[in-house]
Structures are given as structure tokens and as C-alpha cells.
Image (cartoon, rainbow, N blue to C red; front, side, top):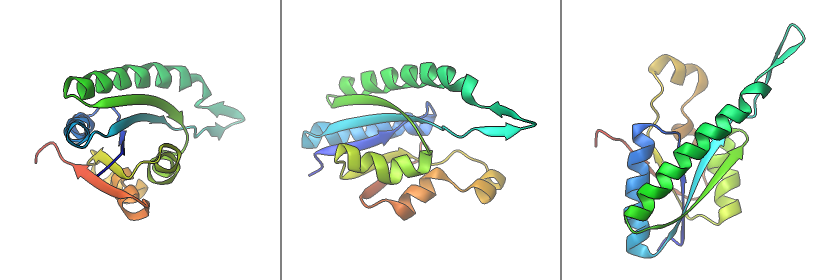
Length: 144
């Protein structure tokens, strides 16, 4: 049914639950999970100083840890999984770029953990992906 399933992870409980759900589907259908961690490449310039570049190595290290944990979780559930650390605009990568790059026909992701004020100002990544993705999206809520 789904040859390739994209699973974005950020280390949150909802993303861990998303890996579990995606792994169950992948094991059932013989799918491959493409588990991705996306770090923002956004930089801020203020007073002539560029902020953000110096934290990318920290993002990469933490992203690789999260990916390793997710892969282990998926494989323990009997799913085939590949991991990728990606730098870019989170919403665009998950909704458009990565499904196309990996040939995903389903995105399984955790529900946003952002509070109401931040969501109103910035917008939820999950809501953006649901609205803009060209493939099916399954949203996982740890409370469900």
C-alpha cells in the first residue's frame, strides 16, 4: 500500500509515537521508513552579527541522536528504516521536498506541541504540512 513512509522526528513524545505508528504500518505493508530530522537553516542578522551558524553542529549532533533512537525503535517493531539529517525550511522540507526526494506516499508525524500563542503567530508545522502536502498525512497525538 505504502512503499515509502516519511517520518519527521524532533525527539518529542508525539514524534516517538509517530515512529511507532509508522513502524507498525511499515511492518504490515513491507514499507521502508525514511526518518528525517530537519534543522532550520534560518539565520538572523542583528547589529551586523549573524546569529545561528554556530549552533548547526549542535543541531546535527542532537538530530543524529534522535535519528538513531527512532531507527532503533522502528527496527525493533520489524520495520526497515533509513535516517537522514536535513538542513532547510522545516515546513517546506516535510510537505514538499522530502516526500518527492524519497518517493514517499505517506507522511506520519506527531501533532504539534507548540502552545496556542506561538501557533497563532508562527503557525503549526503539522497544520502547514496537512494543508500543503501532495501525499497523505497521518497525524499522531500521544494522548490518543
